[in-house]
Length: 422
Image (cartoon, rainbow, N blue to C red; front, side, top):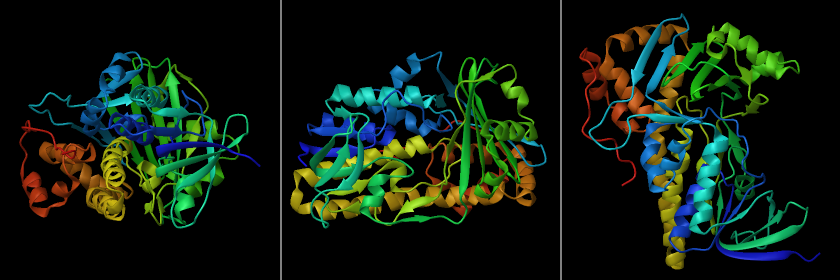
């Protein structure tokens, strides 16, 4: 069979936030870039729709922040999070205001809007977009990834050749499986995403409602729309009994969250994603690397996934530019990429697992809620770290914990946000 052949400097599989932002950076640097995605845009994506404030400077670098803010009827700023413990006690923590120009807020926006804006930035930069194009095999030698075979919108098979391949195709990455086996975590969970329209939103605050059965997250995504994401253990799937929407509504009732969606209608069908905590055994191969969720997903609670996609793409862009400019040093550049991912993600994962260990246990969460309610400095430090405005390693230092625990003073402004992007 004769296959049509395409050649580029870089082929990126997956045109979500990681793939599109990487494509923008590489095209702006002068490389020929192809973005392949199995779906067509705009397309829905099961997601909490919250973006941490640490992502703001990255969106600004890409030229995407202002277009997103112009979607004023379909996006909402988030100033912090309210958390309800298992027993019903509430605490809240706002993102610390800074003396810099970046807004002290996250953003909540439907993924149809976010992904379309980022993809348009890549297209404008010069990347070539191939929608409804699904990669299904590597082509050529086993040692180096130098070509893939993909099926296009009419079922035609094409070969895509490149000097570097990137897997940015999400949680169940096909490219990650072409690189090597996958491994699963010990606590598999599913997420059910509902978007309601015609509701009265609760201002610029997200909510997390906790129970022994999981977490319910809420974010306003417009003046009259919201996202409700239910995260449960996979063992709960047996209780769905073929009625996903009914299962979600019953859980919303258990969390006493019906007032949040009162008078509203489902914008579209409930979407399901998971299981989480899936990781590849190899994040790089000769001629290829993984980025975003494809490089390993862990279960953040507060909108960190988009930041990880955007910043991971920035790291990947540097790696690919170095590899293509100096091919003889590719192996060193890929090794440095692996080290940078570990150094950046390691503290965040430890902090996330620590938080998860507390919020999943009522015996720990109830006293933690009492402590946080009386110590604004500690609450602000935690929400700034999970919002990617402070390094997670800073929060994990015992001396920082002791200082924050000792302080009962109101939160104060910090001079500048954490710059993870230098």
